[in-house]
Structure formats: structure tokens, C-alpha cells
Image (cartoon, rainbow, N blue to C red; front, side):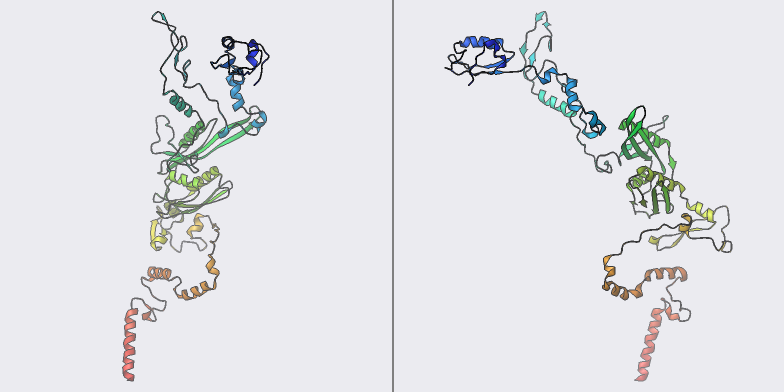
Amino acid sequence: MLSLKLWVPKLAGASTCFRPGSSCLLSSLKVQQCHHAAGRLTPVLSVLVQKQDKAVLGIQPSRNAGFFTNMSANELWKGVTGVSNAGRKRGRGRGAGVKRRRDLNRGQVIGVGKVNMMWPGLNAPVLRNGELVRQQSQPRDEQRESRLQAIRDQFTDQRSFKLTPLERGWSGNRLPGRSIGPPDAVDFETFEGFDTTVLELKTVFSMTATAGRTRHISCFAVTGNGAGLVGYGLGKGNTGMAAIKQCKRRAGQRLIYVERCDGHTVFHDFFTRFAAVRIFVERRPRGHGLQCHRAIREICHRVGISDLYAKVEGPTDNVQSITKAFFLGLLRQRTHQQLADEKRLHLVELRPEADNYPRLVASPGGAPVRSKEQIPADEELDFQLHIFEGKVPLKMPPKQPFYMKLPCYQTHLNKVKHLKNQEQVRVSLLAEHGEVRSFLADQYPECRAASAALWAEKRQAAEDDQEQDEM
């Protein structure tokens, strides 16, 4: 225990404990005198008194003024959310990690706390019906804490909200790859059936002589109705919502029409490029699906293309160059009728899924078809060379499986050598001669497949006759 040698009015800065029978300057004081001294020091001291004969257990100091009461709210919040100049130059205090001010008094009423009291002039009138209202306690509000907690949960750190798998973007809840609805109406004209997909959302900085380092949000999106009308736009703004609205509006103002083959794919294979991006596009039959870059896939959804293969070479993260290159390829493709008019020849389609059966898809209109004599000898009639303007895409050969280097695989090839290209030969013979036959069929009729069984019967009968003659 600590014995005091101070007067009672100076106890405000001390912590004193008394023990019954202890010798000190205050041992001769009565309990009533200690109560009187403690009552005068109530704003400063908290006195613990045990009602025994001339015994005071303890006196503890309390501080009503300190760090949180001497400073304003703005100064306190600045210490929590502020960033030094050196940290601001390094990019701190921005983005998801920034701390924002919160209104901690939100939902609270002046004069009402944990203990529900009526304070005249604060939360109750001073006079009521000509009578002075006195301070009195009210029934405790059991729902007060739950209401305050619900209000505070609204302005706490933002939590990631869940989306359905169809609404998610390329990377979870991030905006690229997600749908943001149709463009805004222009002059009472609504974009019915349109939908917009965000392809890129990023933060860009620019350095100017007057404003210095400025920060903007850039948004790149594509819109379309799934029936050939499609457009893309780039928008910038100080906030994300402003950039999204601007790019969606610009995409709706720059619509173009893209023709599709049979409503599901492109008319022919093509090569396109923009800046350092190169794209090789190949048409695919119905049901194949979209096998391409994710930005090209979203563009195909907005155009209405459901079957396509595209290979991107160069920077695959430059979404804007990929989009512009693919749009140039779609605009430069030629329809079947245009190709037939250019060559003044019939355009015939051979599909592998139909055993390469020839099908006429377009004929020249307005001019007669050229004959073989009218076609120059040096004219190239290869369709692929014509659409690629005399160039052939160089594709990387597929990797060979490991078993092709084993000796057993050579043995297998020797066993099935006589069956190589058997199906292709049968199809070509049926298309050219109408039957499966050998090139010696004119000299030896038994080389025809239709008469093979008849000649086998005749040969067997001749062998039976020869055996009977020998016997």
C-alpha cells in the first residue's frame, strides 16, 4: 500500500489506497469527511468505499479529457485515412485498399443511449401542458443494438457479392466479360434485342503540364443484337459508371451489319491483322462451337456466329487490337455470290461431313459462265489461294505421338498398308465412274465390284470341272 502525504484537494493526480489501521495523514479522518472530499472530486476521481468503521478501500483516478476529446473528428479521420506525400507518389491510398471515412453517429439519436432516459430540452420538451418535464428513465429498447449493427454493416468494408455462373465475367465478379445491358435510347429510339459486353476495364494515367498526373477509367465494350448488327466503343471518365455509359453509347452509335453464312458461321477462311495482332479464322460446320480467343467469342455472340475457329498470333492481351482486327476481317469477307461473279464460274462446295459430295452454292449472275477455253492457263483456280490473295497460311505441324518412333508401329503400318486410303478411293471411284472398279476393268471385266461375285462362282465351277476331268 502507498501512504499519502498530500492534502485531500490535491488527490486528483494520485492513486490512493487506505487500509484500516494504517498510519498516514488521513488516518484521523472520518468516513463522512472522506465522502465529502470525494464528492467534491467526482469529475476527477472514482471513489470505492466500503461501509466499515473508518475504512476506505480505494480511490481510482478517471480522466475526462484525453487524445480523443482534444482533437476534432476531421483530425482523427485524417490520421486513419491519410497518406504521406511519399506514399501517394508510390501509388498508395488508392484502389481496393483505401480507407474511407465512416459516419459513426449514423442511426443514433441525441440523448438516447444504452440507458433510455428522458432529457428535457434534448430529446423531450421542457414544458408539457404547462408543467415542467423532469428527467426520468424510460423502458429499455431491446432492438436498439440490432438496428445500429444493421446500419453499420451497410458502410463497412464492401464484401464480394455472389453472381450466378451465367452472369459472371472472365475472372469471377470482375466486370470484363459481363453483360451491362443494351445501349441507352437515342431520340426515343430504343435498342430492343441488343446486349452489351464489357471487353476491357482499366485505369489509365496521363501526365499534363497544367494538371500533372491525372487518373481516368477506360472501358471498352461491344454491343449487338445477335442477328448481324454489331458495334464497339471506347469510353473514358473519372468514374467507372461514367466510362461504362460513354462506351455503351458510342458502341450503339457505330453499328455495322455483318453477313453470315447460313446464319451460323463466316463465308470462308480469312486472314486479318491490326498493328501487331494477326488472326487466322476458319469456318466450321454447324454444332462445332466457338474455339477462339475470349474477346472474339464475345464478339461472335453479339454478331450471331456460333461456329468458328480462330488462332491469334502476337499480343493476346491487347483486346482492342484483337477486336479491330477481327472486325476488319468480317468486313472484308466476300459472299458466295460475290466470289462467283468475280470468277464468272460456278462455286461448288465440298464438305467432309458429306463425303465431299459437290453442292452448287452460287452461280454468276448477269454474265455467262466461262468455258474451259476462255480460262487462261496461268489463272489460279484454287479457292484457298484466291481468298488469301495468293498466300497460304503457314501452320505449325502437329506433334507426333511417342509411339510413332517405336519399331512396333512400323510393323503395324506394314500390316495395314494395303488398306491405306481405301475409303477415299471408294468415294472418288463412285463419284467418277458410278461404281467401284479397277483401271483394268475394260480389259478384265472381273475387276468390277458388281460382277466380282459372279466371276467367283464361274471360277469355282471351272475348278470343279477340272477336278472331275482328272478323276
